[in-house]
Image (cartoon, rainbow, N blue to C red; front, side, top):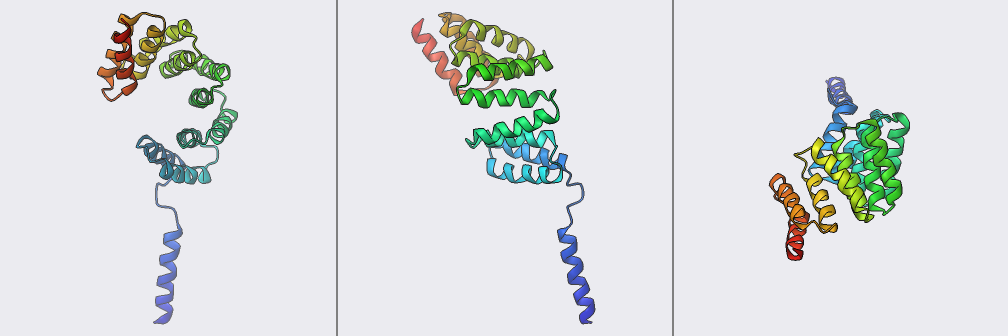
Length: 208
């Protein structure tokens, strides 16, 4: 009797130690990225680390971990994740784009521009990379170039609010306030909670 109980307990613990069926690195990466999208960064990091424990070369997990670390303000660690992804697959455009975002936060604008350019070289129709490039160029006060990139972003991804936001910022900086307000309005239609667009619109109106 005692032997049967011991075997049952042993089986229970062995079963608990086994991975849940279907819990692959890809699925964990998707779960971690969903937690990132929900702004649950610490939880996302735990799940993404589990994905990478199963598959250290999982690009989506590396990219997701990079984004999560960036959101936690751990910029250098984020760059390490993107560099690993790029070393595994130099054509993985998300890593180039997101590394550019981190470098922009670090005010390393020339280096960031090079990252966005690489992402666009890989995929010339990568609208978000054009939008991020416009954001970076606006911060670098290169407004004419920013407008060109933002124009391309809004052509390629007309439903992406931040493309219109970055276009509005460039136009306002160039003194083209009517057009800036129109771009901000489009951004707000697409994303009513985009406070940067609301603030930019109000400022542009005050300068008209």
